[in-house]
Image (tube, rainbow, N blue to C red; front, side, top):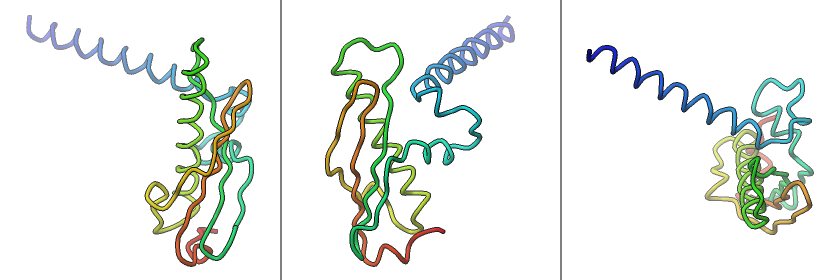
Length: 134
């Protein structure tokens, strides 16, 4: 009896995790995901612009899409804003070795349109150009 109970719990947990991953995949615009394999390739499609501002500053402008199924505009903007910020931080983590984008980065501003949010994320680090992975 215990074995059957454990199997049922394991199946329930598996089904709950499977539903969550499907919902998370819907948060990114499906047109961006077509034909893309890795996470960094997807995030590169979300980069609007990137620029070396000075010897110590690098600006990343990145897009984020809201969670699917939301109707409240405040929630739509908040989830899109969070997605844009996470996308910019993930991209920065891949771009720079030895630089923590969460600690060394800051949001300059957020912009919103009808389908997404755009973050202007500035990373400040001494001689940042030498830290680039290219």
